[in-house]
Image 1 (cartoon, one colour):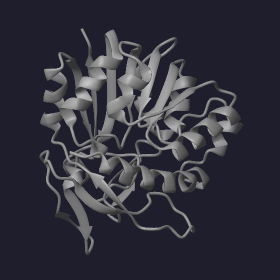
Image 2: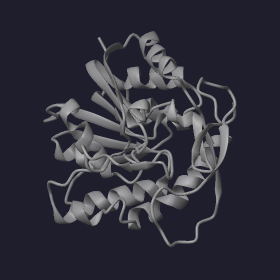
Image 3: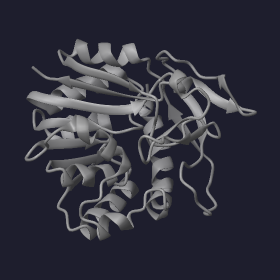
Image 4: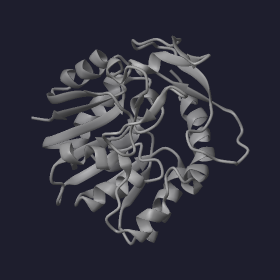
Length: 274
C-alpha cells in the first residue's frame, strides 16, 4: 500500500482544522475563560480514566487539541500527535492561550514510535474518530504496544463499527459500507461535522472499517491484556444524521431517537501492557 492516503487525508484535515477551531461546536473560548473546562469527550471518559496525576500520556490523532488539553487538566503530562500541521497549529494556539505547556508532534500514527520514542508512556489515549483512518489495524496495535511502558494502559473510545455500516437515505438507515476490515478504503466525499457558514471544498477521504473483534484481536496479538470493553448507546456527535437527539442522561452526547437501546453507537476499550 502506498502512502497516498496520508496526503489525501492530511489535505482534508488541514482544510477543516481552522473551521473546527472557529466553530461553536468546539467552543475553544470556554477553555481559555474557564481553567476547569473539559471537552465533552473527556468529560464522558473521566469516570473510566481515573486519576491521571503525573501520568505520562500520549494522545494519538489529537486534531486541534481540545481532548489533549483536557487530559492535561486532569493531571496528565501529555503529548499530542497528529499528521496535520494546521491542526497542530490550532492545538498549540489553544494550549498557549490556556497557559498550558503541552508538547505537540507532527507525525502519522504509524511513525509515532520513531517520532516519540518507545516505552515512554503510561497511557496511550485515542478519542472518537481514530480507527476509521487506519488501513492496518495490527500495525496500529504494534505501535500502541511499543509506545507503552510496562504496566501502561491503552484507553480508546471510538465510534462503534456497527454504526459505520450505515448511511441515512430518505430518513432511514441503509447498510452501505462493510463491517469487517477490507484492504481497500471506503472513499468518501468528506464534508464537515460542525455548523459553519464557510464555503467548503468537498474533499475526498480514505477511510477503513474494522470489526470490533478485529480491534480486540489485534491488541491481544501484541500481548496486551484487555481489561474492559463497554458499548454505549450514544456518541459525541450525530453519527446518523437526522435520526438522533441529545442524550438526556449525558450532556454533549447524542443517541438515536427511535428505539435508542437498539443501537451501539460507540465503545470504550481498555488494555494493559504486562
